[in-house]
Image 1 (cartoon, rainbow, N blue to C red):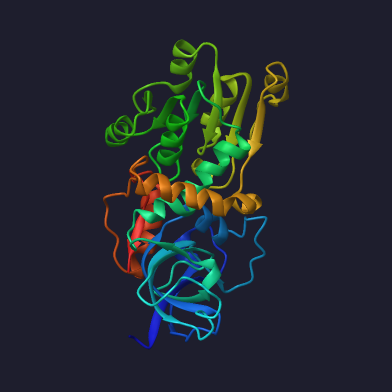
Image 2: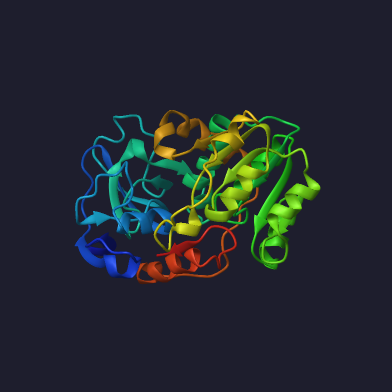
Length: 337
């Protein structure tokens, strides 16, 4: 085993990822008695979290520089602390584990054993489930109060979170609409059972929704923001629910100033609602959501999409972030270490 490893830190606040980060070399630490040492094989890219962190724009995170970047990673346990067996933790050297803690952009890490989730194999597919798939499940069920026999719209539906949301809504027995921006993404969504795919580069989303769904949309899983958010508000059904899961259209620039009427009349006259979702604020549901998603995945009830573009080595992470922010991905973007 190597004596040192690389990780990415936020060294200064800046508008873009490249200007804010630094790749550093650190000694590989031995695990404390209640910890395990993991050699990460893959890390998932969370370009929104990364970009907002670089700008110090995440309200629930108190950033003190330097700051570890990245979240989800999957790897192999290479060493365990002396108390692990006594704690009755079913973790041993060689096990595959996934972690969803701040600091995922690293080649090795020590963490408390209780914070790792065992999986069958350390494959990139797992990173579509945790935490992005977990977010989709909790947002739909707990925030959106997803039912059956409703019309559900998922924006950015071919992304890492969106394609899981599409399948979960279908499994619940709903008619699912997905928006995307390419033919490859359209094919992916058709493969995952999306009932109506709207390629916004070829069709007008607002026009399609008004023509084909005149009664409105019951539940909207919204990840994009800007004009698409406005379109979603305009097309909510009576007692419709819109979940704000992200706003990727603004991750590469500062928020726009909105010069138009406020939305409360549009909500009040339909008894509709807009609900925000943030994974850490629904922590009590995370463990059960992880178990449910792994069960669905291992029983082939949901499929996962990993973007086909290969990124290798921690040095490729800035390029992977840019790839995602530019909308070039089809599924979850991962980096192999």
